[in-house]
Length: 116
Image 1 (cartoon, rainbow, N blue to C red):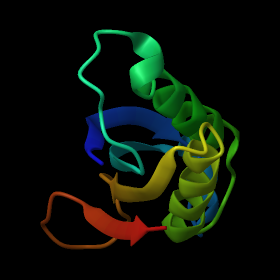
Image 2: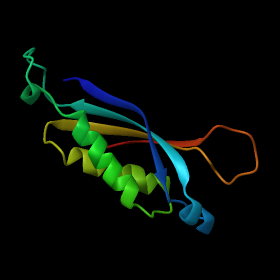
Image 3: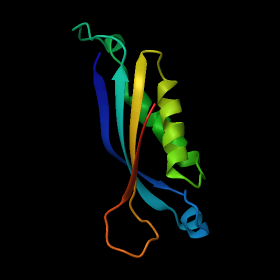
C-alpha cells in the first residue's frame, strides 16, 4: 500500500453561494492524496501502479462542470470521481482551497479537507 499525491492543482471555477461567485468565478487550488490498496511490486510497468493522469482528469471534469454552492459538495464529488477510476484505490483525500472569498478580512484562502 502507498499513496499518490497531486499537489496544488489550479482551476478557475464558478461555484459558491453568492450570485457573483457563479458569474465571475474564482480560483481554486486542490491537493489530492490517493491511497492504494495494493503493494507496489517493484516492476517498472504502468499496470503495476495507478495513473495520476486519470486522477487529474476526473478532478478537472468535476470542477469544470460544477455549479455547486458548497466547496464541500465539490470535494465529495471529486472523491467519488477519483475512486471510480480504479478498484485499487482505498481512500481519497481532498484539500480544496478557495482563494477569493467574499469576506472582509485579510487571509490567503478558505480550505476544507475531506476523506472518503
